[in-house]
Structure formats: structure tokens, C-alpha cells
Length: 383
Image (cartoon, rainbow, N blue to C red; front, side, top):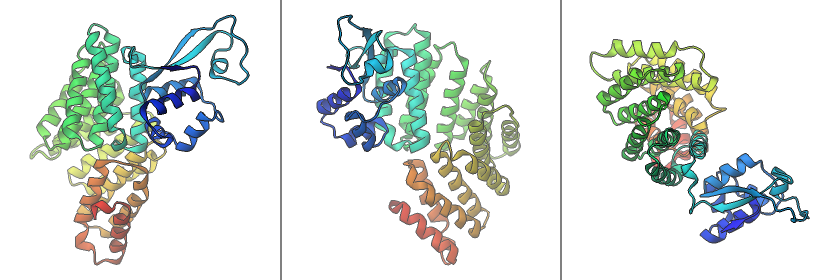
């Protein structure tokens, strides 16, 4: 099954799977209107985006020599758009020859998962993530000596773990992280191993297994030749895992301050690290410091990740409630309510339920009553 242009490929995909344009749009991560424009040849997209779109539904682009006798096309097809006179593009189902044997392709899928998670949350991505994971494992097991593929498989497994974690599939997230660690052990890139250990520390801490969270973070910090950004993140994980352990408060603060003091971070990494360190100070019951850092992170990170922004604003609301400041908590709860329609995250939904439960004691205060009603109206299942 193949097509010579993107519109025909999209039609073939829908016909073979019994999908509507709306279903295909959800799988591609774009709007139904945009799918309609592509199918009806009213919009063009660059080859890089074409490859990314098709990868999400198990198709790939194949480039073949263009026959000399081929006449000019009456319509502007994708062949002439991308490689005029040199080659033809064929859009094919990737079931027979898995593109997941290509390390570059697997990295592209991992990057796509990360971007979509930042924008949407993990819940809508679970099926895609699990499918990518299964295909990557099969490809990697067939080429255990391919170091580049092992590294790419570890990177993808890590992103799948983060999707599952955000979707509330914690046991599956840990399993994916452990697969990633196995692949990373066969990779020459130490940065990848440190990243997977960072994720495993996050998942263990979320389960309340602080000891394992500490162990994974320390293991990551022992890895050599790791970037400043990754080392800062591991120190943050260490500080957050140590915070609830009696007698480890000083060690927790030291690790958190060490993370915060890291310089030369990209803007997104700096914003995310600031918010994550703020969560650690919240666990230490330093609510003023936590609120300050979380507020700074929420204000900066929204342009990259509505998901992270909702998480940090929710944490601000919780910190204010724990500090006994219902007026500030109400402000943050209304900010959270405005952010929620843009994300689908099991962790965020659970946090809303926690906020509504812990704010009940101030429900008689008018400003809090309004904030609770607003929050419940956006996420009715938590009411």
C-alpha cells in the first residue's frame, strides 16, 4: 500500500483503518480543518513535518530515483515541491520495513512525544506512546550491537515513561523507564543514562518510595561526563526525594540550592528547574520560598508548556493552603482553572481533587467559595 503524494497517503490511511478525518487529526496531533485542507490539496507542508506526521500513524516517506520519461505534473505534487527533477517521494506503510530500525527516526519520534506532552499532557498520548515503545523494543532487540539504536531506544523509552507517568500509569511508567535503562547501558552516551535515572527517580518519588528516589538520583550523579543541566536536574531530584525523610532536611536543602545555582541553562530548562526546586522547598515546608519559585516558573514556562504551567500554578495553590493563606490560594486556584482546558493530565486532575479537598475548610470565605466553584466547573469529575 503506497501513495505518491501526501493527500493520497492520508486518504489511504483513513480508508484502510476506517478512520474519519477527526480521528486521523487526533492521531496526527493537528486539527480536523488542517487535515481537510491537506487532503483537498489546499495546504502544503515541509518534508520534515510530513515525515513527523506519518511517523505517528506508522507510515514513512521513501525516496526513489525519478524516471526520465516521467512527464510534468499538471498539479504541484510533493515530488516537485521537495526534490524537483531528482527523485520521487513515495508514501508507504512502514509495517513491512520498520523505520524504528533507524536511530534518527526513533529520536524524531521521541522528540515529537516530548513536544506533544508539553502541550497536551500525557493522557491523549498513551496509545501512541505504547505503540512506539513496542515497535522500538522489537527493532532494538534485533540489533543489540547497534549503539546508536540503543541510545535512541533509551531516549524514546524515557519519553514514553514520562507520558505514562503524566497519564497516571505509574507502574507502566516505571517499566518503560527500566527498559530505557537497559538500552542506555548499551549506549556510549552517558547523558542518556543520566536522563533515564532522573526519570526513574521522579517516578519512585511520586510513589512515595523516597529511598529509591534518592538511590536513582545518586546513581545519576555518579555518571561521568554529564551536562550541567542534567546534573542540576539530578540534584533537584535528590533534594526532593530527601525532603520527606526525617533527619535529611539539611541535605535536601543543600541539593536543592546546588541545583538552583547551576548557570548557563537554556530558558526553558531554567524555568522548569526553578519550578521543580520550588516543589522541593514546599516539601520542606518552606512555603514562602516555594511560592516564590513556583510563581517565577509559572510566569515563564507557559509559552513552552501549558502542562508545566498548570502543574506549577497548582503547586502554588497547595503551598498557599498549607501556609494557611486562603486568599492567595483562591487566586492561584482561579489561575489553575483558566489553564486546565488546555491540558489533559491525570496528575493535574488528581492535584485539583487534592486542592478542592484541602480548601474545604475555607469554603465559607466568599473569595474561596468562588474559586472552588470555578475550579469544579472546569474539572467536574473532581467535584
